Length: 452
Ligand code: NDP
Ligand code: HSE
Image 1 (cartoon, helix red, strand yellow):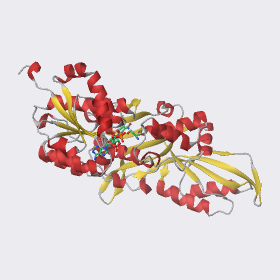
Image 2 (image 1 turned 90 degrees about the vertical axis):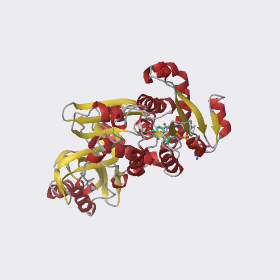
Image 3 (image 1 turned 180 degrees about the vertical axis):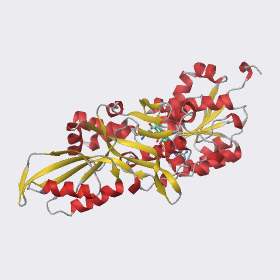
Image 4 (image 1 turned 90 degrees about the horizontal axis):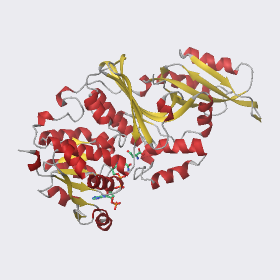
């Protein structure tokens, strides 16, 4: 059959909010270019949204608009269902129903896949349908494609990224413009970057969802969000951002997945670190200079070395760019055998690794510590002694000038940068230091990565 004769792929869109409306706009604006790439047209023929009136304003008479998503799934003329509603509840039911109905699925829903991915991919495999999710990680950056296809020669050693636009936007604006956290968060919501529940952004949950997906496709392990370590930026203080700058570092919220073969667990040798937390990154690294809602992902492979992927990580059209790319992939594969497809998680489903996610105590990083101490002789010696007892080597120590006088006498901030150590060792050292009468406030710790 010649390509001209192939009928267009018919798409049913569930949810026409920020990403859904971008998807509709991009497909419409670039339809001819997209047809030439896909080898057939891609048309949104049916849209479901709770706000039917608003949806009609977006699509005009180009597609049928309904309020009940199940009508779209049940429509025999719909080949592909695009889920852009979000969340774990109704979205999960709809995605599973679409799969059961034999529809291919495209979703931007990282929360859904990070938590329920194993069930969803198994259901899709059983039905022989595609579940594509490029938009779920880092918005418009084709990082899923890079990992699943471009880097297949490599043993991936680690992946580390700024994968939440909202928090990067907040950290950048607070630092550059001195704006308050709440003001910048509102602006991120206005610009369509934030999740429906922005605590997912600021508490690190969204980045951890994405890191979970990256860990699965980098190492061929199942998605295990429940084992990820998750910390957001709400506990980060302006003081530490400032001290980090003075020491030549930026603080970024990073999602990190690292393969470690130097540890033994009850499962055998090796494991995967899976963690999201604020991180000091040397200012000279490109990734430290990724600002605003931009995202960047570093991938280290044994053959390729370190590669970096940079672009808009959130927003209507950047995210739509990834959704439409998935639709083009499906259009190209619609009549192909299932074996021709790239596996959901980059590795053949029967070849998944059993490497466990390591407990946080086993994670190895260097640290920034800030201690509020009494400015007295011997204080530093006691603290460095405790670190030495735990085998923690010090990289740098800075003692600020005494800046406050209280009943305890002069007080000051002591900043310590350490070399690599385990989280478990650092926990013990912090507990011992905290017990010293000369340590006057809770010790602040921020993990540090060289990313070299
Ligand atoms: P929005 O809230 O802007 O859009 C969701 C849309 O779905 C709304 O129009 C909503 O209607 C509609 N909706 C809710 N429930 C139903 C339902 N049961 N049936 C039909 N429609 C429904 O979200 P986004 O577009 O921002 O996000 C969509 C997905 O994309 C999420 O999974 C998100 O995590 C992900 N994503 C978002 C990015 C972004 O930059 N915004 C980037 C990457 C991924 P109503 O408003 O009336 O409730
Ligand atoms: N809320 C997400 C972010 C949207 O800020 O990065 C993109 O996934």
